[in-house]
Amino acid sequence: MEVVTFGETMVLLAPDRMVPLEYVNGFHKHVAGAETNVAVGLARMGHTVGWFSKLGNDPFGRYIRQVVRGHGVDTSEVRITDEAPTGVFFKEQISPDKIQVYYYRKQSAASLMHEDELNEVYVGKARILHVTGITPALSPECRKLTFRALEAAKKHGAAIVFDPNIRWKLWNREEACVVLNEMAALADYVLPGIEEGQFLTGCCTPADIADRLLKSGAGAVVIKLGANGAYYSNGRIAGNEPGFPVKRLIDPMGAGDGFAAGFISGLLQGEDLPSAVRRGNAVGSIVVGVSGDVEGLPTRQDVDLLLAGGSDMEDIIR
Image (cartoon, rainbow, N blue to C red):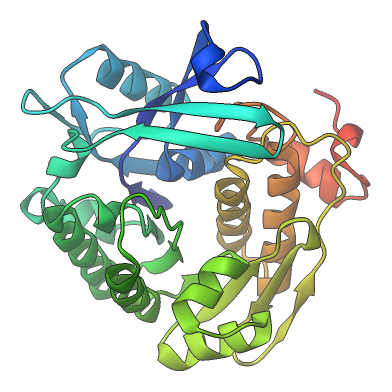
């Protein structure tokens, strides 16, 4: 595998109209998880990707595995359990940019993952390990698994791409700060949003945030700035790559995962840091124009077309 990632993926039940959730009668079923969003995005761009997790032995678990595998992601290391159900969550969307989510994931199947289940060879053979800050928040055993995976990547020479992806409903702030900073210090690339970076470092500006994370051990830092693109620094070069205009914002959920997929794709293609960041920006701008976590993830042809001179996502013919 070029990339291996792991973590909890759930079934998302999205309302069929933009009203408060108590007034919704119909829902659409989707697969949603930060790590599988990245995995599917990379697979759609032509890369070989593996994802591992633990799913409940139930219809939702079977659905997730079928969908992820159907996108070309290797699921051979996914484990099935009768001990707990697959997690689900509901999305409430009042407007394109006003979204609330309600999780039903406590004691889910994925929270039962533990470090003894890690296939170190599977991780070690990858060029890149993608990891988020969601997984260590699921349970103490998931936290041990996360750090063992990071150690395996270090041992075998796989680059680590870390997206904090903070979920405040899973953490208390003190614990999150300690654990996520420990993960950032082990990473070759850290991809926080601006508010996440401010939380992790106590700094305000992208340059100061990046400098603090670099001094703590990170190899390079890319700070996502939404419509303003992203700031990058590796201690030798630094700068800002502007975002791509989006005329119709449909669903901002998954934009950060799209960015990560595009950025990693750039690294795998041998692009330098600014070019990989620009590719990440391009994918993120495409994703927000489509409803759903994985439905808007583009092919490499889509991305290359936008990078070649398209001014916005409407330049891509689907």
